Amino acid sequence: MQSEPVTVISRKYDLSIRRSWRCKLVEQSGSLLVLLGDFHTGIEHPDLGLIQKGTVSREYYWLDRWYNVFRFEHPDGRFRNFYCNINTPPTFENGVLDYVDLDLDLIVWPDGNVVVLDEKDFAENAAKFDYPNDVRANALKALDELKRMIEDREFPFDSF
Image 1 (tube, rainbow, N blue to C red):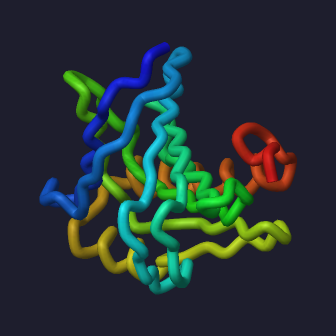
Image 2 (image 1 turned 30 degrees about the vertical axis):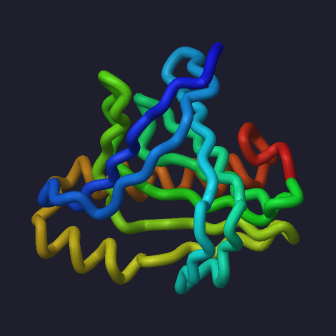
């Protein structure tokens, strides 16, 4: 497959845009889309520290799952970390991948340490935006599924 440009849009629950970036679609298999992006500038992230310019982001999105997985690699190709977002299943049409980020995040470090982030933000926004019970349940189920996949070294966590 020749890589195709994709715009990724991450929204808040009220559908306002949280952030947006450009990637390339490098694989599509069933409900799985694999995108490839890179950091054009260095970014200081509150939980990840400095993400160097040239860091590669291999992004895994499933159109029928409540999470996505980013595999960050240092500019020299070494594994940096995984960063997982809990979100509504994305839509993908006309080169735009669009989803609602539900605030829960998970980091996997090279030593296998797993850190869950933003549980307080999830609880606050679930109350603020009155997330329906199924949204809350699916988000927590997705978090548990990711933890199991990491523990079992299931794809895409089989490569660190």
